[in-house]
Image 1 (cartoon, rainbow, N blue to C red):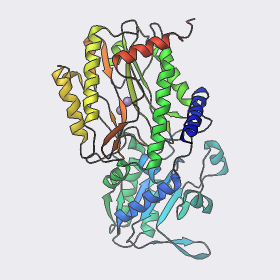
Image 2 (image 1 turned 45 degrees about the horizontal axis):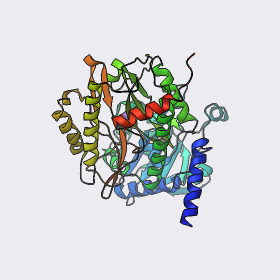
Image 3 (image 1 turned 180 degrees about the horizontal axis):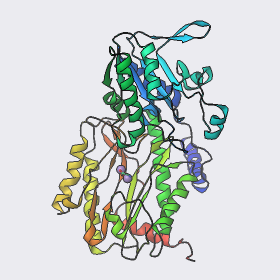
Image 4 (image 1 turned 90 degrees about the horizontal axis):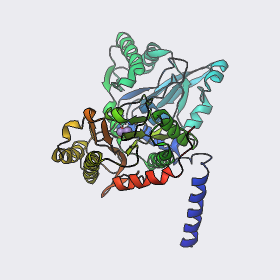
Length: 447
Ligand code: GLY
Ligand code: MN
Ligand code: MN
């Protein structure tokens, strides 16, 4: 039976590699998972209340949903927000037209959009019972307009001396929600000076640090798709090709598997490889150059983040090889340091010590790790624990030598250490050269 099963699984794998999947498999009941996350937050809140803001619509394109809000609700539509009542706090008493007030501990505010607006943006959810049921929230009410509208609603609903917790929204990409928060705080201070405001960020960081099985599965899938995209792109790596065509090949491989790009890919050849966040991807690959490729697919908004460095001519020069091997040793040492109780600082030190020995530490100009999840730079906190997902990505960038090397993998912290999710994508210098040789055989014709 086991063999039969294995045969079947193998057959399925072969098929899966031949044809892109028709749909991403559902993660482990995400609606129930989000309900659990909100319940955990309510336990933390105790007697407090919390408000978590969604991204507003600011331009013609739908905004990328704010991570904390998406984590708790799964709603991608703009202009939404979530009001939560702590487990030991007085529930809200929401007025209802013609009926007695509704007691609630969870209110999802959704934009009361016109049919034209719904069509225009392809919105998924409107206020009302259907959305509440689909999203398993207690009630879904029409969102008041902006920070001032929200403040007025809270001023009506919250009891005397209530403590309201709000995330601080300090990240650069929080600029729009930060503006709503600012307007809300100002209006609320004027209308209800008794309400005390405190920060919610730390608890959300704590919760989001440790991934549940559905989140890990989504990330594993994102990593698998990214590894396939790298493999399918190798045939484009040759002198005369452009960074743009390599970028396009990666994107095609990701999109045909119904995933999204998690960020703008870095496809950086030659001197550009010395720029860690290069994203213009518009130069030509030259013989003798190294090319740094940093790409990640996103599945259900969970972001993979993988980097490999390749010699454009197919073989490393002795100097490139020396630097490459040092970065790889640094990465292996850092991965070996990933285990429960370690910190991002100790992991970073493990990589940095190796690069110091190799006299390359001064060219290592960024940190070794960050958490990954709904955001590619996901919020995380505290010593490493099982269920945390981080990257390990030392790099060396020497502009004077037109040289940059980064090697990045996604790593899951486990009970006894860690598991490298992207371990199947070759990274030893000899394996990289062999993979390039094999890919050359199927190189596309140059026109
Ligand atoms: N791709 C962005 C990073 O590696 O942090
Ligand atoms: Mn990266
Ligand atoms: Mn990264």
